[in-house]
Image (cartoon, rainbow, N blue to C red; front, side, top):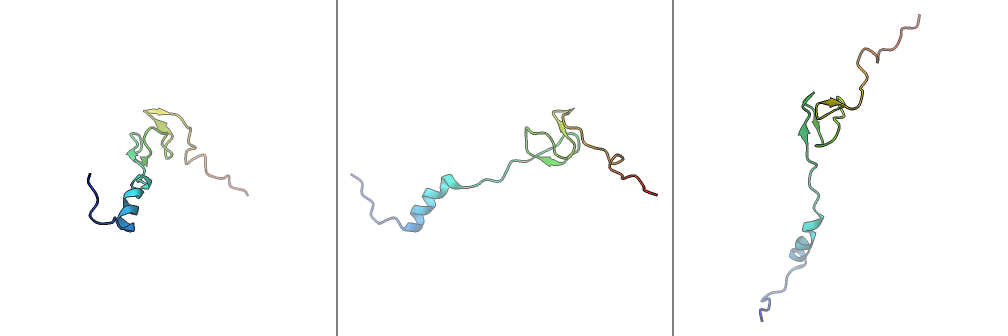
Length: 70
């Protein structure tokens, strides 16, 4: 039967055990409407479109202006 020649160090043992705990960066895709980066298969937070259809109505810049008080 095969027997290890040397004891595995704590560092090597812990590196092996830590492989499944690694955090990968989130996947990003470009929005087809506005070109902003977004998570794939989700509504674009910048323009509100998903798969070429507007899902969330975003207020336009003209509606955001406050009325002038005089």
